[in-house]
Image (cartoon, rainbow, N blue to C red; front, side, top):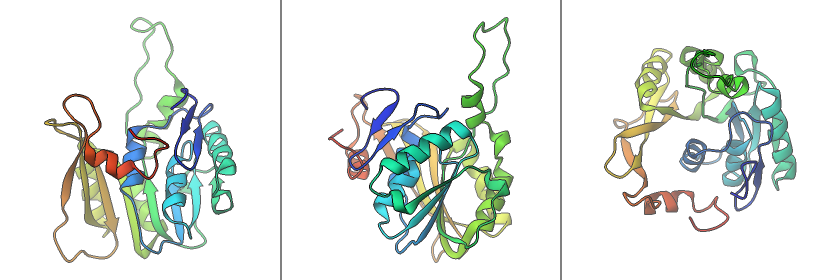
Length: 246
C-alpha cells in the first residue's frame, strides 16, 4: 500500500477515494479462498471498491463479473478500478441494491463481504465529532440483513453454483440456520484466527443448493504469528495477488 487511497495488487490497483469502506483483510481472505471451476457468470454483492470482483476476474479468466453497489461513491471507485484493470471488458458495475436486482440469468458463483456492524448511536455529549455516515451505512446490517441476504443468494445462484461469504463468528451460525431454511446447504469453509493461539473471529462459508456427500468442515486459517509476522499459510494463500512479498 502506498497511501490510504491507493492499494496496489500484483495485476491491478484499487483507488478508494470515495468509498466508505476501504480494502481490508476480510476481502483479501474471502477473495483468496473463493474459486469455482468453470465459472462463467459471477456476482459480487456489495462490491465497494471492486476489489473482490477484480480478484475473481484474475482467478477466473473466462468469467464475466457483475458487481452490485448501492452507494454512489463506492460505485464510482469500482467503475474507475475496473476501467484501469486488464479485465475491464469482463467487469460491470451496477449501482443498485441487491434486494432490487433481478438477474437475466443465474450465476455460477456469488461472492459477498456483507455489512454486519450495527449503526452506532451518536451522542454530542460523548463525542464532539459526528460519525462518518457513509462508512456506517456501508457497515450497517439494516441495509442488508441476513434474512434478505439469504433470499438474494437463493434468487441469484444457479442450481449447481457456489456462494462464498465472510462473516464474524457471531453471525456465522445465524446465517447457516437461515440458509438451511431455504435449502441452501453448507459445504464448509474456513475459520479465521487473527493471531496464533487466539479464538476464531471470522468465518468464510461456502453454500450450494446441492447436498454435500460429507459433513462440512471448517479448517482453521491463522493470519499472523505471535510475533506479528504473517503466517506461512496466509502468505501462500494470498501470494498470487500481492505485488511483493509480505
